[in-house]
Image (cartoon, rainbow, N blue to C red):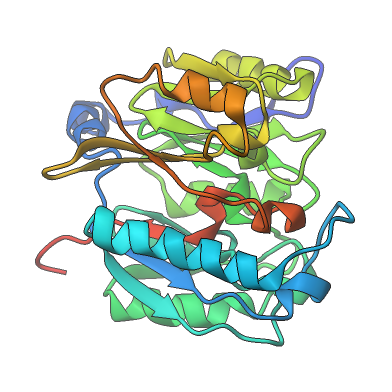
Length: 308
């Protein structure tokens, strides 16, 4: 059931008070595992991205530079951070296919295969689903033709989910996500500007939301805080797009944050440099951002248990 939030179309689909006592006792353990990953699914950059990928802006994309940036991104995940990489080939008929995050939401050993809001992107889920099956995850498919969900609209905090209601994600999609991940509360947040919820926010650590400074971003954060039973700290950065970063907690590395570099967002980079307990890894994203792609968009991160 959706409870309307006063003055907007946000709501709680699964109230935290419905969670069992046993689930509450397990929350500390779940939070301890927040940011722990072993595998990443990535996909090659098609040359068709430069001319044919969906976009809200008009900037021209340098295809070669986009490929170099993506290669560097994958190198960081594999060589710097030690993740096992599952690399899917690019598909020239799917110009947006490098943005694998939109095709699946993975939490624990369950993978929800989404139904992207843009019809031209629906076939992207096939290859991602195959890779997730190979990793022996429990696959849940979003088959309802009334539902749409992009992974870029899904913010998992370790305690609960926030789902952006945007041009790409609707309420029915959020309801199906809530059904797939019953252990967690799911609240919806209106995305009034920007493509996705994570176009202006992400997690910077357990209990830490990185948020852009624009009015729409700050309004969304206020809604998330009021919808939640949990208290989150916030790290506000001047640039909304720079607020999309990737947090990990890895063996032998500790807390890691992948973020856009000083060359792209100098003032936001100064804010990240205040995170003294994090290993900061700048990763360039100057070309894919021209087609609304952010750092989280280009991988599906998985914590695969040894017995899976």
